[in-house]
Length: 638
Image (cartoon, rainbow, N blue to C red; front, side, top):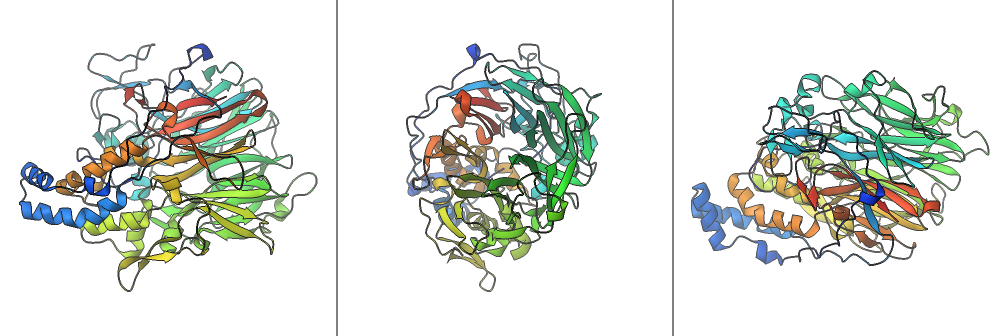
């Protein structure tokens, strides 16, 4: 999902799916396991210590039966790439603040022995027959929202096995100690093609915020037949005692067309129904602003959808699937929305095809002023205006087109917004526009220069003549491709600003993804997608001739830096700001005790209860170790 090199052992690929029957999981607070104390991360190595030595060259040459001179030449060519990828010293987690405790964990829902082989169900205690490994297909606690005194969230399965949908036509089928992808031999392949062979139907959970008991409330196939084709539960919203959970519908061709929406009565957990909205193909977070619920949605079109709208919910318990379009014809999907200063602000994603982003740089839009009552209407749908584009910061137009805006929120009178970059997509997108280098070293060089860590910005007075955007975390200069020279050269960001607090990714280039922000106890919490822990699983994807085409020799020479990145950075990150004038500080850097968790996927605060719930994502589905396990986690900070 992230980088391009690692242990040369398997054939891999990535991204999304959904999952099948998952056992009921009830975890009372008495048995909720608190993560053990956070270990001191591995020290950052000196760059020279990761460069291949003469002994390394001799060993690799002997192992792969290659002339030492050829291996030595490759080592010299890799030296600047290894230097660029060498991790820096991670920050120390600051003491104080809420304490974390695990509330629930994805149950073992399948037993695995071989790719394409039998998949028996586990016993009631999660154990598997002799010779079979326990498997947790449900990887993401994906969309979470507060509904009264409960957390409602849905899941998505094996998302790291569907990457061909974005990166290109690569068929995953491989196994490591942490992950298996069955690709064309998986149960989803006959339904949705080889890219979605690891698909499983999603699940829905309800968590009592007081007792912290978790129950599986997934509707039956008779109640919700659309689950049979739902990629996963990515979107969430709540208003007037109704919870909406939604996700894209997969097509037999392997794309996404149509949005499947599930509705629940929040106070009781009663399932209200399901409906397919064919005109949309994705939905993310819904937000109540000025007493009305608004959601952003991607319009149907192309393989994954194109363009977007903002919808106002006009439904109720008897008809929960009514919406009114209040912003139409947006060039890109408004994946995140927030209320600020009496208006709505969107943070949009790029429009992506397999291996190529199209449609220009994503943007942020500002609504007309919200009326005192009733909210926006269809009459306002053409009156939104752009207030910022990613290309206003990013000087490389191809990189800007592939990047996306991430989470945003209004806090202490200012708007905070961020970015996200799907790992490795920037690289294949750059090849699509600038040409794919003929050598593996050239392709790795594109990776080093085209990929980005997340940025964090502050905006005041959006849409006004006095609007100001400040770079909090980012880079003064970034690599830009010089088409005339055919090389990457440093260039100042287009804001012409030095970051106020620090570099992109909070100093970790694998913090690619700003997934969610929330305000809790007057402090801003930001959860990232940190894909460093996936690197040791990712070698063979990069050996695919259609992608990086890495040789066994190159993968072996890169292995020390890949292992070092994982040792130093592994585990999702949470950063916290106490005020606009204070730099963010690391609150947690080890996935709340699961170093295979790579992201904080949602926040659900209960201020009056002193609790903040968070759901995690992981690439792993096989690992079952104490501090490194597959499947989603639900954690509470209190």
